Image 1 (cartoon, rainbow, N blue to C red):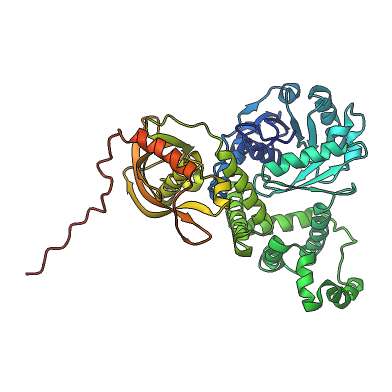
Image 2: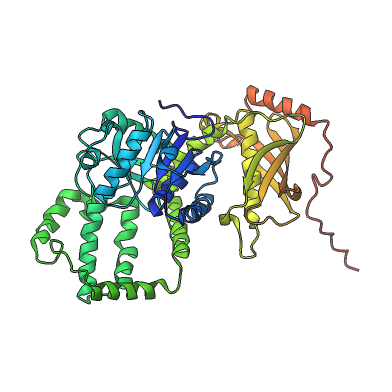
Length: 508
């Protein structure tokens, strides 16, 4: 099954997460924000608090990452038993601690209780799937789905099948991951620690030796990474970076020039450092000093903001076509916009309630209120929803026609606070073959108080030719119906009003 279900992005609508720690909580957030209902089982006494904090960070990050309309958030349910959690699930993600005996026991319980057709992914960072399949009644549906933290932002998932994993399982898993904005990379052969963690472990071992031998401290080592090759890796990986380093002769020249260095006695990669109490305390103390009092949650938010900035920059790469993780985000947003066009038509005899949202943590400014440019974002979302309603959807835009906003007037009437529900209504004030004049009102809170208005004039354009042109007949027809329905509505008194400054008196 590959068709997107109503209300969500993926070809599934129900998932179960067994384990709600750092990785499990990230999976929960990723599924929920894709519109998938999630059942959770985690016996840890703080599981609900931890998941709530991870979800809050994820929603904040998504508010920064994209302005595309996300589906309605899935329903989160904490269950009293594993059996209750997996009942009816289409994807079960196991994220319990990295112990083979524990994972086998938990996976066997899932396998016995979950629907036979449910996908069963393990978040293991190093155990081979064949070892995890031992004793399962349905081993063909089990695979490794190894993500990277934070799961809700970093898109990569290593998909690793065991000897019994079916090709259909791998294909279904990749389809679900692709649909929710993740990059499902299929590893050709199973091996302990897969690909990513083998690379990380090699770097990690060498780093520990550098700290133990007092070559540098942890902050210096992190600076070496983040101010140099870490920036290159974020957008071009290892081999493509070295291809460039080879100059016009490319990779072959690079290997010929630097390959012999691999035999030099520079590295301790084959030796494992002894993590005795003294080294653990040394690294721990340096790490505490580096954190400078920032809590884990504060560091997570800083990390998320930085990742968002990097991905947004990559989305603008190659002249707007996107590159790497940015290209993946661009394609994900295109699916979001395409799906947003399937919303049911509202009552045309009243101002159109096309956007409902909440004030996310990412929208709050230094005063503790919704920052001013977010008002314009909501009004822009309402305009986009109207355009989709009249047929100006992704396909229409890809055909080089759209409406461009040419004039805007905003009025800020009240403050919006964190978590408040927002509703935006849209009234059509006028339209002709090229122009569209709309008036938005933004309401907040249960009392539905009016907090802002936005008046916009839009011009229909041929984006390829770079000039105004008449809208397509079906778009004009849809607009005429709505404009006719709104013709009897009371015209806003402030419509057409400029900022209320009096002209200076003439000089005497």
